[in-house]
Length: 197
Image 1 (tube, helix red, strand yellow):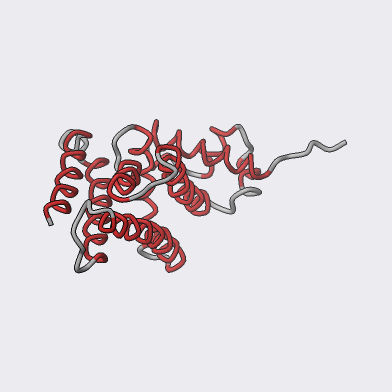
Image 2 (cartoon, rainbow, N blue to C red):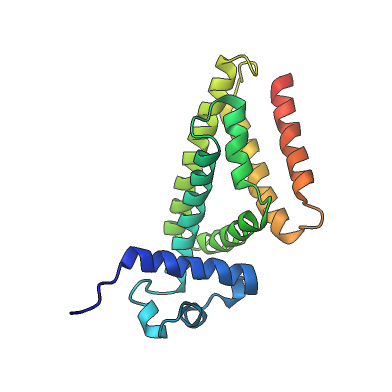
């Protein structure tokens, strides 16, 4: 009887291999040949699950977004107001090895998205979901009296997302200067300004 293969589990396994390669060898090591070798597949077998390296990296980017949201849900499944907003921010920021690896993959995906309308649309879709959550948390913070009414919620969300994306870049490219303590100080100052109005 032929062996039954769980294709979704095998795809997750391959994405896990990509993570490990990025963390241990750098993004330049992520070739289809190296992925197949690290996963213990024949090079051709990898193509059964992902047609090319580009597709693997796209799946890994989807995984980043999902993993960030899953961690935030585990940390605070009932997120509300500024506390809930801070929880989401902490999971996006490159504060540890796992989130730094996520940032490395995100930066690689952004590079690809520059020349791919499909990837750019995927990135916009993900960011819009975070925008919606951030806007909702800010609205709750105003309702609960944590902050005053914001004249332009979108502008505040734009500023916050720009800071978070910037921290991902700086956390990867300048880790000695962009320490977790300095990142947290930046986030705390942002929230302090919100409270001051």
